[in-house]
Length: 122
Image (tube, rainbow, N blue to C red; front, top):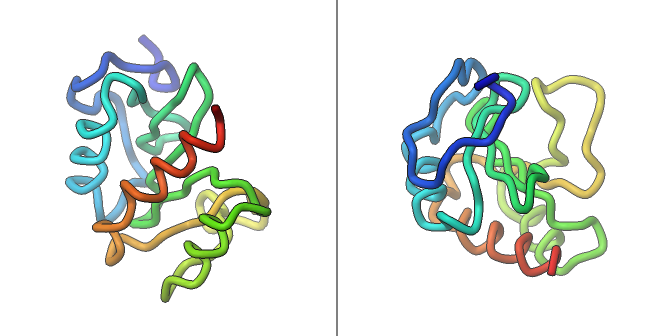
């Protein structure tokens, strides 16, 4: 299995999650909470959760990137959290316009935002 493929629900993270940073234990708990609906894997060296084969959330340098949709109320709520930004993998110049990056210090709220992202895809 390549590191960019999905993994079985509940399976420990495999592959080189090189860029996860802080929050990996919280991310694992999040993945367990949403299994089997969301599948965990590694994309671009980062642990991620996928819904129906499409990346929905990704842990990068201690920030949970989650696809909420820029026009959603959940996106606005996420951006109000201290330290939240637009998601830019690797802190590079490319920002994902429909994604919020939520710091690990708000990991207790990650499940709320992932649930909102799932609902937005239905």
